[in-house]
Length: 218
Ligand code: AP5
Ligand code: ZN
Image (cartoon, protein in one colour):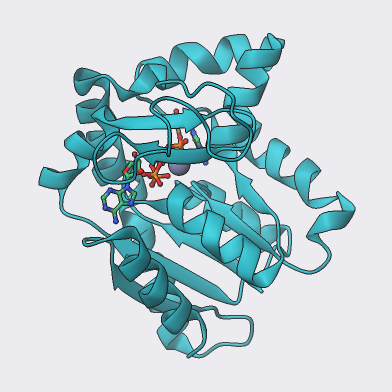
């Protein structure tokens, strides 16, 4: 299984990626998680990316494409992969085509903007694994502690209300165009075209998970 999860910031890509990667035994390639790991490691890339991410803007296409190409060389990608937060621009989607990076499905998770801010402001993350929680909608068993490792949860720097609004605007300006890009390609029926599936991301996490599983088995 090779797929792309598309959706606004806070739509639940990371949450659903955790279910999908387990079901299909494939790695989750989250460019956001990769950039946050670089920030934590204090690399030059991390330092440069932090400024851009804290401003709610997109990191340059060249950097992102380089990161993804390198990641795909690792042996765990042989069975398939799940892209979470990539591609985010037409240039990134075109680069996938140019490099022969194929996908079987594009799964769009649809959530209206009004619900996004509350989701992100209440988000808590286990940084090492990328597991995500929400103080109200998806709380950990013990407040601010990861269920699996018992390690503390953090709040992302870019989850402040004003940054969230900027990220949403960037999504509408630069990423939303990909919905049409993949829809059109899927409908073309050309060889190598992915299947396009859209599900609602509103409702309990498990309900969205079941909708995702159903969409990916059609
Ligand atoms: P990235 O980390 O990719 O962030 P994002 O796309 O903005 O998405 P989020 O991680 O915020 O949301 P999500 O959809 O994963 O939602 P989640 O499951 O966590 O990117 C961060 C930054 O890195 C970008 O701004 C950019 O600067 C840079 N970057 C990354 N990739 C890039 C690229 N390809 N090109 C250029 N720059 C790039 O859920 C959110 C919350 O809602 C959680 O608290 C969760 O518990 C809760 N929740 C989930 N599902 C539900 C539900 N059904 N009901 C209620 N609550 C729910
Ligand atoms: Zn995410």
